[in-house]
Amino acid sequence: MSVIDIEIPSAKVLGFKQLKCKFIIMELTLTQPDDWHLHLRDGDLLKAVVPHSVSHYGRAIVMPNLKPPITTTAAAVAYRESILKALPASSNFTPLMTLYLTDTTSPDEIKLARKTGVVFAVKLYPAGATTNSQDGVTDLFGKCLHVLEEMVEQNMPLLVHGEVTDPIVDIFDREKVFIDTILQPLIQRLPQLKVVMEHITTMDAVKFVESCKEGFVAATVTPQHLVLNRNALFQGGLRPHNYCLPVLKREIHRQAVVSAVTSGSRKFFLGTDSAPHETGRKECACGCAGIYNAPVALSLYAKVFEEMGALDKLEAFTSFNGPDFYGLPRNTSKIKLTKIPWKATVLWSPRILSQLLWESESESTIDMENESFQVLGIDGGRQTMTITPAGLNLLGGYCPSVEWPETIINHTLFSYSETVRNLSIFFNCSGGFTSVGKNNFSCPSEDGVINGFYTIDDARGSLLENRSSSS
Image (cartoon, one colour):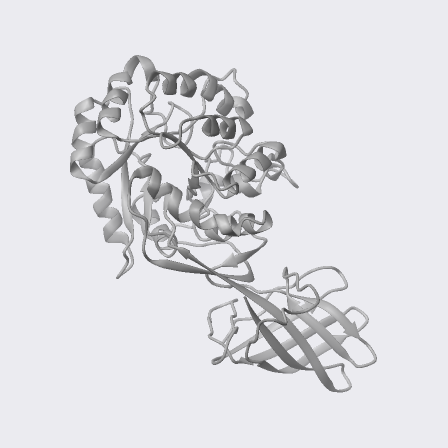
């Protein structure tokens, strides 16, 4: 953790005084994570989204539900080549391919997939359960049992979208019914089959996974199912960008999933289920399921673990449990998270992606964008004001046990009204590594210069973000 002591020349309309701001920077170094459930799509969409995953993760299990789906090893190899061609230069990202299980998949295809060393799992989509699942399985035990038996022989994991599709089953109960009628009987029949129950959402799934033998049944968890409950679908109107499958559940289920992943259990690991769609396919009369979270997912996982007082267990969830389950080596590279308030905004791509779900502050991130400040206190007699980046709990201002070079922000005061506690400044920040771009600012250490314009408004309880480009 580091502390920055910022001296800011401040003023009313009448004259300049000194304005002090102290804020905390927390850093966390992790073994580079992997994403064990990722949608990269294809074509232009693939090129637009893959850099966001590559910047955070060393490997990813890539979903096969394209049009047409990846049902053969040959198709998986070709898709892998497309992904590799779309990677940024000098990237070390490794896509781990999967096959789309159908009623006609053969045991020989499983043998071939394992032999290539390219395919790492087979995905079960119950027909009609989610995006591009129309070619999925209609009768698991009647048509796929011989394939599942071969998967046991080849030590090939089965990845499960754990929902039934019977229209008489309430959509909020589909996961529980799937466990009771399909998954539990499957595990009893083939106890040596490795199964990943993906994107779990309920206490029922948590209890089921915890009851199974370690090393054979595990679960991935998305950031959205850790931070949102089903109210997020309807707050202030219908929220299509919060719609995913499995659908968000009650708060009691969210809390159960949070408790499970932050418990330290080796049975749960990171799987974002980041699922990009064009805006027009989300904002329409019959919108697609899926939340695109790749740029913010790691920040949100860290935030959840911090709130639960479990940051010491974050690395196992993000970086150890997944490769251990798959029998793969852990990554040796490291990634650093820095806790600085920022704001996820609408993300644009050549084909206009669905906007990001999280447009509120998220505090742990690789970079910082659109920083906001809040007023901590005003001394009218001394004409001084104390400000801090929004969202940080300073607990009295700073951590005295940590030393950090002083940073000076020189600025021209545009306006200040003590009545409404509104301060508008143009700042020139020297001291610190800088990250410059439109609507972003970072100046946390010792050298570099950034210019920008901020408005601080405390009286109305709002946190107004950067109003002009940095330069």
